[in-house]
Amino acid sequence: MYTIRRSATPKVLFVLVVLFISTNLFAQKKKPNIIFIMSDDHAAQAIGAYGGRLSELNLTPNLDKLADDGIRFTNAFCNNSICTPSRASIISGQYPQTNGVLDLDLALDPEKQYLPKELKKLGYSTAIIGKWHLHIEPSAFDYYKVLPGQGKYFNPTFYEKGKGEWKKNKVKTTGHSSDVITDITIDYIENRDKSKPFFLMHHYKAPHDFFEYAPRYEDFLADTEIPEPSSLYYQPNWGSEGVRGKNDSLVTYIGTSVSDRHMYRNYNWMLNDGKYRGKASAHQGYQTYMKRYLRCVKGVDDNLGRLFDYLKKEGLWDNTVIIYTGDQGMMLGEHDLQDKRWMYEEAMRMPYIMHYPKMIKPETVTDLLINNTDFAPTMIELAGGKTPDYMQGKSFIKTLKGKEEKDWRTTTYYRYWMHIIHHYVPAHFGVRSKDYKLIFYYGKHYLPKSEFDKHYWAKQYYGIDRETPHTWEFYDLKNDPEELNNRYNDPKYKAIIAQMKAELKQQRIELNETDKNFPELQAIVDKHWND
Image: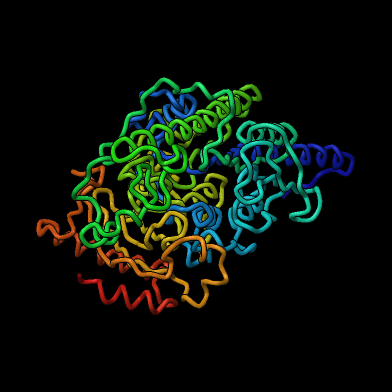
């Protein structure tokens, strides 16, 4: 033990204080900033780095470079391919029946805005800019400037923190939403609290339907024939009675189409006045649909280039975790379908790219099976925290470090609840492994008929109260990546189907995703489980 002379005490204390402050500031600087970038409905197949039929169009050079310099996940999936539930899972780290958000109409409990809360505990300033779409105020964030609902593509209005009470705090802007959202984000970073690391959710509205792109992209791809999926025209072994009806009796009713197939909702009718028929309607509808969509994608990528250049100029690039994803995928004409909602690959799959040179080696590609409940745990651990027990997702930080994950899932669970609403997609659930996919169409809305009149959609869409056929589908993704052949009744796959059914049943229990609160649905599941 030693003592300090009285005359030296002030100097020693001063040195200790300086050391303490310096150490604290150094520790804060060591923590990475985190920018979580999410576009609405940006499918992986519309990013060059993911390959596929659109990869030669040079749509996303900035995202492609981000992937080359970081890690690209080839097996990232949502657990419900629709905006609000997917965003709720990302924020909460929980599956829909646990966080309470089953569909587009339900709001996330304010107490379950877990991700910004956990990062604030770790010393981060938190912000969200752009699309929010969870109905309630994003009150857990230190700052927000978010679109009301879907928001507008042009001259969007925002709710901004510090401008009054929620929904009375509207501010107007001028320009295309992708440009405006990028401007707001750059301004936020420029004027942030620089004494703390920051966590920013940067969310674009684009490329959500109806694909209103900035005028400067009018000529982009104008003279280009967009490559078409073969399943737009021909797929005799795809699907089941659950999506086609007995003897194809429901092909004009289920699934919004690109061609003139669907009697109510098809792109040929919406944009070409229904003047084309058959294969011509598929071709013309697809070309119109895709060019509008891809022009919105191009606007997102160009703005990301602008944001990335700013981060590099300000010396923030190397110490910032950059994540890019979509809130789900998108059907881009595959199976003659548009929109999302389906458990088919193009809708269920999420792009997921991460860049953090202090941890992630360039040109890394992983097939680890992740889903959107895993995003929050991973960001929390990147910030120096631990995954909370209440989160159902798991951190994959070991993968980012080039190490192997232990005790990882072998299948990921999916469920779509909004039977028939909007795009005439039947309710279904299932599991996907790396090589196989099992889907059950139970074909009934979770609300009883007595509740329908309380909802605006009940009068807008024909047949919401009807049950569609209850059938299974099984796809061998290794040999049939485009899901053209339903192998559920093939004896060759009997053992693997039985194994996946057992996995599906177990996951529904472990994840609180059973139908114990919906007895009519459980009765359908029980009756048809062994079909």
